[in-house]
Image (cartoon, rainbow, N blue to C red; front, side, top):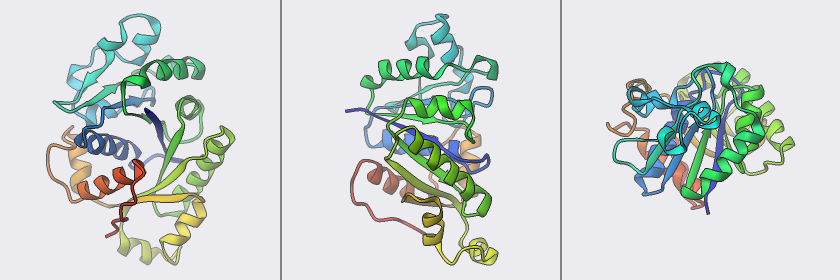
Length: 244
């Protein structure tokens, strides 16, 4: 049975899109057929991070408007069972949430996982992305403003009836975290957001560089083994949390 998971964050700069792309690659490396749908109209980035940007002709708005069939706007990532639908290049082409849900419902049976990259914040783009999903991963950084955003996102998801919500702490720097002195430990961060932890990704300049060049999954990064562990937990296995 296919699963539709929205990747969300309360504020920009958390590394949400990098997390979405990396999780997609990790799932595909486990022979799961994965579709990533970019919902960040006007600010799309998944296509670049997964290296399909130079092949793009059509995006989601072209499918909905009838400018192309669905297959023409679905781009495969290298030789992986991983596919991308890009967001519209213009924010003016944002799609109504009921139309988007119908679109996802029509597609999801062809995939093991559909990952939806939501725009940061709680605007209409978030409403559209979340309306079509049945699970959610909230991405935060271990700092007060980001955590407050995570709290808001969690409340919004619950209001939508989405209860399977997990927390992913990204760009974690242990030295900086304890130097700030805002929280005694990561348990306080988890309690503040109010949902179960699925993983902690350390600050990693290498994976940031790879994502900007469209090379996620092509070159080794220390974070890859952590993403593999997170994917096991996404699939329901009792994998250990790997925290550096």
